Length: 127
Image (cartoon, rainbow, N blue to C red; front, side):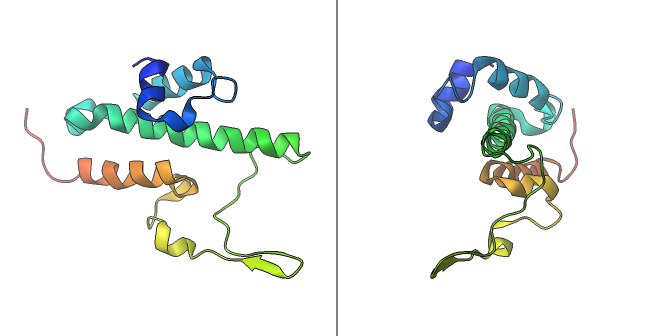
């Protein structure tokens, strides 16, 4: 798959400065190891794209953290509470995470991927 196809299907990654073709291609290539074409069949492309989107999103977070003087790669879970002056916000992260989903729960793309991956791995397969 070419980065151009990925960008067409996921237009939120159209910014080639933020998401370079080489980064997109690297994650598309890595995704092949995580998406079994025999199981995913006609959804293989979607699986590859979701894995790629997940890792690109994590990468951009790391860049933003580094640019702000933080440590890139630091593990952070979903926001559950935040307060600034008199304003606060909290999220029910349990409602949007997949049990035993691990790091896939760190992005909405990862959640979509792991949900589908678990379905693809269910049941027998005959060739």
